[in-house]
Image 1: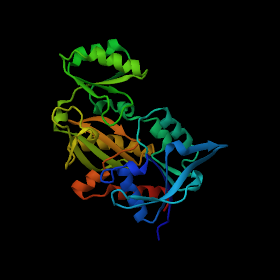
Image 2: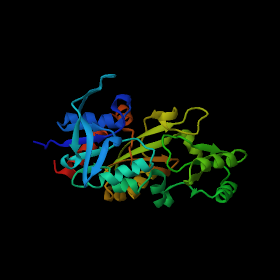
Image 3: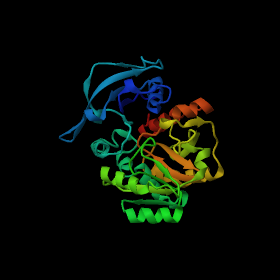
Image 4: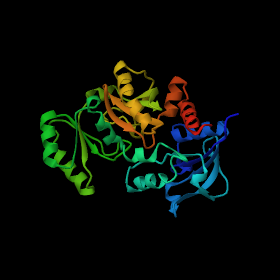
Length: 316
């Protein structure tokens, strides 16, 4: 008989999730089906005291019933060193609060398996980790230097400009060669933050979609295509992108084969990469999504493969 695991889920408020789309919910349903005990807590309820990591958490059961999809038990102070697995699933932004949580969780990992590895998550933000694979990605500039941004625009004309640590398509702009707004956008970004910007050569194939490919232990197991809405440069489903059934091209399989071993080596059990026109644009390791969309189109429940991988690492 398989070993029952104690699982703590670090996530955003469960009452506000969309149970028809949320990947964390799919993971929780699968864990429950396997008999694993689960607790829910918010990242703000983490505490580090004398080397001990705790969270104010509540036992939780889940069901696929809208508006009644969760039931909490009594709140308790949960010693995270005493659980088997922590799912780090709170949404970005990847800010100092997020980074601090990874530092705290490092105190318990790997004795308690944190998914994904907190140090690796901290060292692999989506839009920076991808730059370690320059042959696979579009021409990209990461800088806060206005002169370099202008030079890049002069060279490539049609560009995308976006915040380095943004998520969900927020703050992503497509600027054509004759667009007069680049200076104003750079001013706006630099007034709000000291962080560099990401500037990329526009890949026109985005009109055919931005493919989300899910890798488990470095192996590509499923994908969906996300097609931008009319008049929209972004394909994120948060901003109206339409998911479609898809298959992987030879180029996309080559991309996955190139990055997969490094993802596995870094303890990245569940990863979602974004590919546009055969170019790798992001490697999502913080809180990847797409499980329910893959299940809807392909009938493949990748949360099962993820739990198989977790259980294998835990010896369950």
